[in-house]
Structures are given as C-alpha cells and as structure tokens.
Amino acid sequence: MAKLSLIVPVFNEQDTVNLFYDAIEEEHKNFADYELEYWFIDDGSSDNTMDAVEKLIEKDSHVHTVSFSRNFGKESALYAGLEHATGEYVAVMDVDLQDPPSMLPEMLAGVSSGEWDAVGARRTSREGEPVIRSWFSNLFYKLINSMSDTHIVEGARDFRVMSRQMVDAILSMQEYNRFSKGIFSWVGFKQKYLDYKNQDRVAGKTSWSFWGLFRYSIEGFIDFSRAPLLLVSVLGGIAFVLALIGALVVFIRAILYPDTSVFGWPSMVVIILALGGVQLLSIGIVGRYISNIYLEVKKRPIYVAKKVK
Image (cartoon, rainbow, N blue to C red; front, side, top):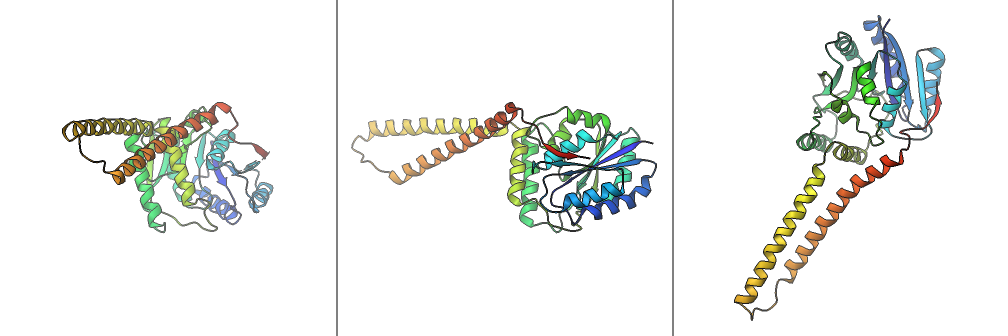
C-alpha cells in the first residue's frame, strides 16, 4: 500500500488540531487504498497545541510530531516535515482547514497517475480577507513575476501533493533563508494547480500579521530576484546624470550672467534630501542581500528539534 505523508505546521493551534484530524480522517475514506501518515510540526507553540498532538499520537500510531525548541517560522516547519516524511507521496496542509481536505483525492490521483509531479491549490478569491491585505498580495505577485525568472503562480497556496522525487529535490536546497512558494516553482517538474474559493478558519486566530506577511514578501524578492540591485544601479546612474546636467547649467549661467545673485536654497535642500533618501534606500537594499549572505555562511541549522515522535 502506497503511503501519503501529510505535513501540518502548527503554532498555537490548540483549537484546530483535533478538528483538522477528524476532517482528514473523514476524507481518508475517499482514498482509503493509501496509508496516511501525519507529521505535526510544532513551531514552538506556547499554548496546549502539543498536548492535543500528544493525545492524537496515543490514539493513532500514524500520527507523529517534531517539536521545535523555539519558534523558527513556518518555512522551517515545512522543511522539517519534508525531511521526516517517509511516504511515496507528500502533502502540505494548514491545520486551520483553510486548505479544503476534499481536494486531497483529486490531487493525489493526479500525482499517483504519473501525469503530474505536483498538484497544488490556487485560491481564486479572497472573500473575508481585509481589502488592503488582498491589494498588497496581488501587487506582490505582479511585482515578483515581473522581476524574477522564477514564475510564482498568483494565489498559489503551500497546499499541494508532491511526488517523492520532487520532495527530494526540494530537500537538496538547504538554504537558510527559505521562500517555499519560490522553491516549489524553481525546482521545476510538471505541476498543476486546482482552483478553489477562499475558506475561513474553523477556529482560533491566524498568527500571520500584516507586518509578518510584508517581511515574508521581502524575503521572496531577495531570494528570487536581483531586480532590487539593478534598481539601485539605475537610481545611481540617474542621480549622476542629473548632477552633471545641474553642474553644466550652473557653469553656463555663471558665464552668461556673472552678476546673478545666489538663489534656490529651498530647492537645493529638497535635492539634497532626495539624493540622501536614494542613497539610504540603496544601502538598505544592498544591506538586505548582504545580511542574507551573512546568515547563509554561518551554516546554522534551519531548525532545532526538541522532540521527535
């Protein structure tokens, strides 16, 4: 019997763990010819999430967990799950049931047939989500796909079923700074996406704040695009050309109108502030790339496990 490993990152999700397990077990009837293996990856929860997972482990021998020593982030949790999964097929799902379990049979059938190496889910609507968050999300996909050679499907979720070959390829990318949506696309293989409408959480509150999502998007730009560095070069070139033109204007005016009094201090202050802002922006962008290099060369582990069951 082929095995499907289900990777479920959890962080302060004590209210959703059992609801998720029950929903998956109910759906498992529709692909009962596959053995199901659970890997709940606890990302340093501070509530009773691990207690709920421990009870499931006692009840079902197919349930396993990796508990982190602290909060390392969802990307680390995904990597840990992929590393420990033993199935021929591997699925990634959120525990809040915003990823519909009813899609699993079709996803699994697409991959097990050999036609596809991965079948993922693509959200086509954002009903119930703040308008400003939806707007920034759409902007992110447009910008990154215009700047990066790696195409990221708009609305794509981490929710997907993958072949063992694709999972092994992802695990070979042991970079510390991880952006899974980009990694899933970068490794290639034959991938397909199924559309679905946004689902509300079954319980609890999301741990993703607007600021957290913004930082995550910045990671995507830095990891999969060199366009920000090109932007810095372009801004520097424009500033240099404008400075030459300005110097030429001042020189010609001094020759033609030698008695002209000094004027234009407000505009001069504005120009200085503008150029200073461009320089600080440029330093910030370059510094962000350098900080990623700094973290990579340290060779720190992607996560530290406190408990593996």
